[in-house]
Image 1 (cartoon, helix red, strand yellow):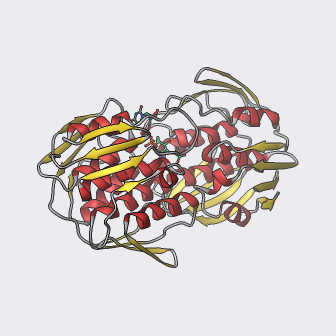
Image 2 (cartoon, helix red, strand yellow):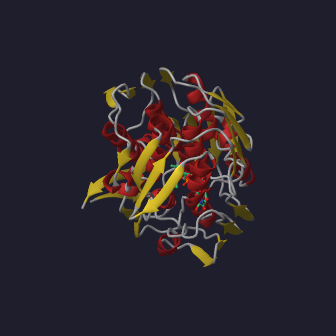
Image 3 (cartoon, protein in one colour):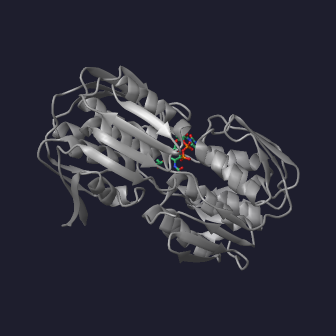
Length: 418
Ligand code: EPZ
């Protein structure tokens, strides 16, 4: 088992490139199932969630070949529309095969998805949306059986702007006859990138980024050459690290608007942040001020995937803060670990009350999921003394060369084996 060993206290200085968005790439990779022609995807990071998705593509019959960090995918011989638990349980976005298989084969049998243990995470909105398009879906013995032979475009009203449900309906809707309109869809930048990717393949989709997406079905999709957007959650993680440790960092491959909400919060905390030519430059010289109240909500509001990291920042800020987690029932598993490091946090239901302390102290802690783990890394970076983080396999699922990039900024962090 691998662990991070961090000797905290160093300020961060330097420049790093932000990797492609994990949550943007996963739907894009799923969308490659929809064409028989070649898809060339650049800047593909080397971490587990992406490898697991590529394994699903290979299982589906697509040929996947790496040329450095460019992935060349050829789906001319794809022939499999079933995927079992072994491949679906490692990641939540395996559920995108439901929409992609329905789109390509008009039929699917898939097992339930896994993913981070942060809440109940049902898929009722995915299933209802696909049924609205005419798919017949039966859930039985842990499998989902889908028959899309009579699918056609229709209106879909989502009760909640679910990212995953929006992706699945886009994937299923792009190759069916008629017009599909998704109301109350997710507005995340990753949805916009998926729309742009599909349109570059010949799809007719508009509206992504707003709350209504319109898809005019086309007969086929063709080859594409694509570079995905930078990962706003990863960029946000490094920004919060700088706010906690002090220093000056430049993050390349960022889009300012994607992190605008966070930038506003960090400016209120006392950080200086500039944006030029797809780079964010951030400087901070004093102890951050607490932000009175932060609530997680769908984009463009504050991202739940940055909640553990911003909580780590509030732990060392001057003053009191309240965080409300609105998306996931159990996304506070980092709290007892932060408390071990000296944080002052009380949680009542979905609300965390944080009283900033002067210092956190190194301790042995455990990453319960990807972003909780990232929050603990940030706490370790600014703590006094040594922090050991166990179960870092969760973190390695979604951050590319995290320790290496932090080292290049001056942090004292390394991976050790048990
Ligand atoms: C995506 O998950 C991300 N994952 C998550 O990132 C992120 O936390 C989430 O969006 C919200 O931004 C990927 O993109 C792979 P949702 P997803 O459907 O699509 C409820 C990370 O750390 N819901 O928007 O699963 C659900 O329970 C991960 O990178 C239903 O009730 O999120 C949750 O409360 C973790 N029924 C809320 O909606 C459904 O059918 C948001 O879920 C679907 C969702």
